[in-house]
Image (cartoon, rainbow, N blue to C red):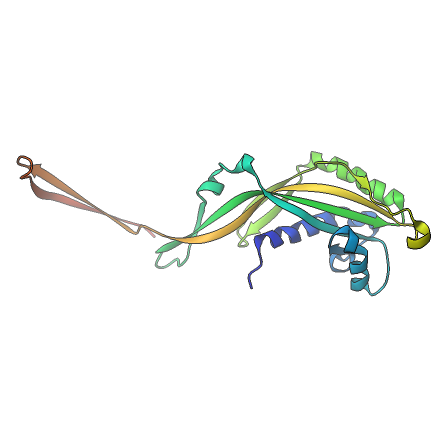
Length: 222
């Protein structure tokens, strides 16, 4: 079964967040040190991955998707972009990619027993806005798509301070809004030959007489 493009964006966001913040928590393996679940489920899921109850990890979750009316008049949204031929020999059809502009709201959480490590990560998050933050994906492995990130909201403390039941560890939440595109591709017919006939019309209405003068044939070149 084909993977949805939304899931591809999810995977891209997980990789981006992990690469950006792994060093602050001394993490090395995205498969072992990150989970894609809401905060309420994250600690259990990381324990299932690791086979033990540990705290130093990152969790990411996509909270919602909405249509982005600000970008709905762009060319890629309204008409699509023609890519490559379905068959480079016959050239009877061409792949056209269309996209729906969307805003995808993500949140990620850093879990650690070391508060200062999280504060250093928070500083990096605040400076991130000045580094042209974007998620870069390649559609079909060929066409680069830059999806810009916005930071709406602040870093918030989500720690459960009932330490006598849970133990003391810190949880901080970071929001990111991705200006993304939900893509699909369709095959459209191509025009391989155009025939233009030139006629001379004589006589009076309704008894016209048309005489073929010349014919021009325009064919698609390889």
